[in-house]
Length: 155
Length: 278
Image (cartoon, rainbow over all chains, first blue to last red; front, top):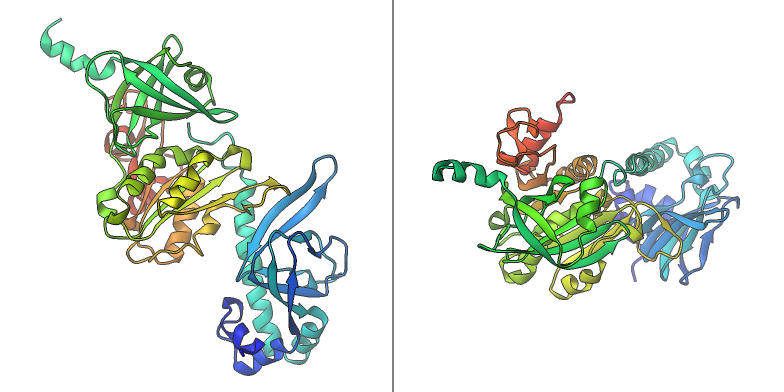
């Protein structure tokens, strides 16, 4: 049976980390499963976890009065859901809902923050990797703000 | 008029075509099939465009959305007076056609290799002929991947055809920029699909069509996966008028898009579009 640190070692987010660092991170994680339509978390709740999706699709949503729930983006296997656990006030800004059966590894944010505070090298590695993730998502999000299929669309 | 003069003006004279079929794709987009009233059929290759003339309204360049057959197929989005008039042309009515013009998608270059087709919004229409070319000769290519993006689920083109493409051995992935929670598919820009698409970057030939910004960021995502820029092809659009390389309206630096394009390698297109004043 493959252990969690073996699985994490093959995930791009943790690629290149020292085995003892992967081991430390794995110590804060555990496998979880969500049924289709089940919520991973809700806007406003305490953000004490992040999820590494291993199977399935998760929709990041927000509720718009009158319109109803709007999907902001979808996240799939290999991607991370949640970064609010890293930054005060540690509250979710959006809802996350399983569009399919989702299998993921859930990491305890407080546990990871404590380990990062005790081990600055690990903290730097994790922060760099999440910053890269944030930048990538933000850059694609900026492109969506351009609404390129609007007036500039081809005939 | 002398025979010489008649020959010289012919490319500027629209031939009358009858609308034989009209199918609604989205709220503002229609696919029209056209047959000539007389004379030879007009076969546009995937990637080429024609000038469509709505009589009494005006003329616009529209890419072919059909395969290499005798039936001329165009998918048109109603964004102005002319394109709206073309979209409103019911079966039996007449439309003027000049062309076909321009070069076509380099499908020969892709034979034996992976083919990646990325269409954003109405940009999927000029790629539809290339998709059918791959589907009808599926054994000639390795992996064929079609990545489709649009503003919302309601704006997706050719949705009735995706299942047929998939059954034919094409990996079709769809994403939209924005959706209500009822949408079960992906939400994100089409360029984000590149990272996990199944193709060999060193060998793949990539065809991109859509808004220029979308093509640029998709090309950069392909380059991030180490696809050489020479193997990425984009369809550019400027203000095509004469479509013969005479009027200069579609000039982009040293090139006239109607004559030398509309399909360019990204290596060349990146140089052309990097000049902000052009």
